[in-house]
Length: 328
Image 1 (cartoon, rainbow, N blue to C red):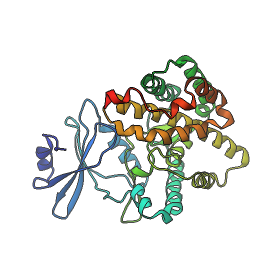
Image 2: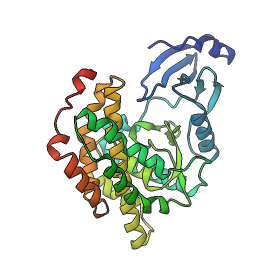
Image 3: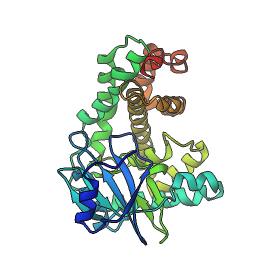
């Protein structure tokens, strides 16, 4: 992975002329990342090439988070025309790998990430677009737009959207006043910093929405198995202090947003395979179906569970994707 052509001039302009660059693992987007080393100095170069990427939202949310007392990367330099951002290096100690090596720390670290969410939800929300019905539906419809065609399924897409409208209505009504929703709050985007804080990454798609969204993102992690007992314990930990009615309503919304998010991710991972040739994302689908089916067992989701039963039966969910070979 070669640095962008404009990187050398950009780094020279901001005092990093002699720095060495090495690639850092990225995410599912067009963004790329490079570690920048110059003697004892370290930084990360984000390459967010226009028109595919726009680094301004990342910068704005990073500045909001730092201003609110959270650990987001400091922005050292930026060239928005080139899509280059030089930012603070949070190191390599991700929550995901730490727990792989130290499973005994699981309960303590998950409590810390829940505490961080509680603090974020107490802070005034960032000035962001709302997580509205149109956005929820666009995301859920990725299943019928990508997964169903890849599985050669002719499904009731209109009925699918209509059911989501009804199920999501009470969730949308309850997300006022809204909180900042980072939308990708999971173990691969949490860094364990040397000063003991939790570093936040990959929040450029943040919106204003419901407090259950990031909680379900963490506890129904698309890339890491979270034991059911741990999920329940952390959900109860977050809800400590809520009265029974409020806790029951929150759990209902948690299940609905979990189903919406997991439906979306099945569509996104299929798109990453079919459109972008990233077939490895299909390996996550069995976990995503397990999580979705768990959410669909909640009584509030019965109409959606019935839709899935009619349109994507269990034997389809577990079969290989017929169109995946062509994409590979």
